[in-house]
Image (cartoon, rainbow, N blue to C red; front, side):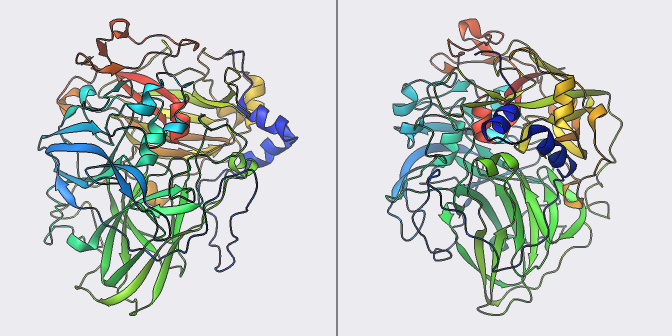
Length: 611
């Protein structure tokens, strides 16, 4: 790879946009808060252009919402190949899932109760074999016919050998046995594939599912102390945008001008699927429902709101409950994030229809590339009376309730990290992009270090024209605030060195205006944080102590014989991780962008958490 120009410079130059003028204006308004409501029916249809793939016309709200079964975390769960129909008017197509044709069951565990489960690869050939990109590190032709997989419990504080490290993968017939300590309070976690270089394809094919962690307050039973809906009134919503071919199969490409078989640095579909069905409908009774909502999309953020403007009551985020329910007309959720919602349908009439919609607009980068915007999500229809219910006034801090959220503490240290976009001219593809953290390749020998039991502040500086959801494995996060910056001046004063040399200067001197605190529904513990373009996103990062974890977070992962460990691409400027020379062990965790196409190339870094 030659010395790289930041991706922003490439985009602006390629499209003839005045860089400094755009940067100044964009940096002045990078707020992560959602836009005002868009009145219906004034929502425009996505543009039909010859530059993008498009699904055949599909009528929304004709298929019922499927609700996955809930089962304990125990025994075996095979990743299998099956056939699935995403919409009534589409043919069946081949898909992947955990024990079912697409997606997986809701796994349920209890706090402090150890759970042991074996995952096994029974996937056969890759559902999206033609789109496997062998220019990615560790990806070979074998991934088309005998794909690797692993499983990451997203949000779980697990030992390194149970975290689903992306460098370690199992082919057909193999699979890991993971032990989860569940030493966390109740939360909405999720599990998904994390195989290096093909994560975006494996999850799009269907390898994802919910994981409910219960405790003595949020038991999942009808008599739970918090008074939360349970049983048929507690429903998972896995939201994923997709594009379909006429034969019903998935079309993972967005741009027609990029050759098939290359990572295109983003996947934004023109159809919204919920629990594996396109634009479904759900009959609801007159009561309060709890929706565990996951943005399981590859790249698309959503601003969820109801078309009739009724509010959500947000009761929690990624890693647990808020202190009190927060009434919000809309909620922004980026890929990998979860939001725990109560919806009051007590006033809905029989036959009345309420649509869940998305009012998020494209960021600058996806606007330039004419990615389709997506409005409709799903429909709710009133269908009779339900049990008496109410919105609980308090979730934490009262008698018989969990402790309130602790205030933001003073960090032990501060580190700056940077998000960059680069021209990858080593790949023969038009607009070949490579996203990076700190200007480093994933397998750089320059490894981040942290200390268990400490609290850091991370200043995440986004210099790209794309928003990025950043996910840290093992750590617990709290959003401190976001502050716009003049990116053009920041880069001019601190021009990045050649790719492969760490670049993470402070951006404080280039801030524009006051720091904006998080919206009230984003104040709880998180594991994934959206970082808008031209912005410093300041995050409190809490690394659990060894006593809290019950294990050494820097313990080596001993790789069983015959299990594949990803090595660097021979043309890449990367170094083998410690212990990988003999493919015997791997250490540490990873942190990365949860735009899955970005994480695959190359927006992921390793981090060792020292005891």
